[in-house]
Amino acid sequence: MTIELLIAIIVTSLIWILIVLILFNNLKRKNIEALKNQEIDFEKEKNQILKRIRTEKQAEFDKGYKSGIGKSDFIVQVEPYKNTIGKKGYFQNSQVMEIGYIYRLFVKGIPSLDPHIQIVERIKVSELNEQNVNSAIGKLDTIINKIPSPHLKLAGNVKEFGSGILKTIKTKRK
View 1 (cartoon, one colour):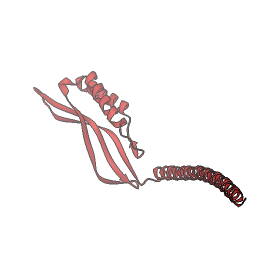
View 2 (cartoon, helix red, strand yellow):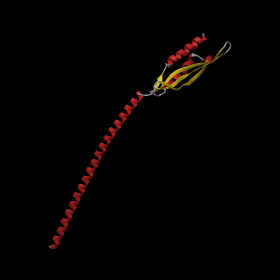
View 3 (cartoon, helix red, strand yellow):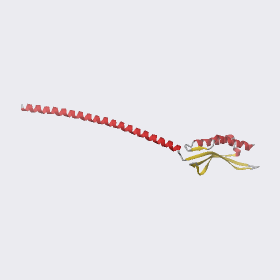
View 4 (cartoon, helix red, strand yellow):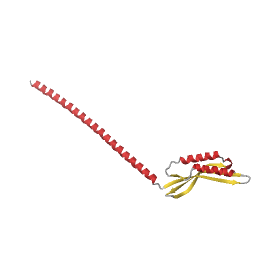
């Protein structure tokens, strides 16, 4: 009987050890799931905070950018340019018309540096006709419109400038 009792105690102990191991593993699994859920919640909260920070930073950047554009101390003034070079004589007419633009930097409304003249096209007076002038004015207009700056101020209208050149051509030929 002592052997049977001993075997019963060992078997009962093994069953209890097995039950404790199963409960321990179950508890461990539940703790791991709880930690995973906490980690997921933490990541969601972290992403919300980062999104809010990004939104605030973008709003501050946009506010500063708009403020900077409005309070700029400098402006670049651009205006069309034409110049006739050469001599108009009795036997020979050797004139060249230069068409381009002048730009100048103004800081706080005061001219800074010397104006820069950029020649877009040179046309001989003998070649001067409406098509050539319109081509040069088109190039000039394209160049001026491609300057991407909020600090750019156009001092004259390019189309009116072209009309003025064409009127000059017609009066010189008469």
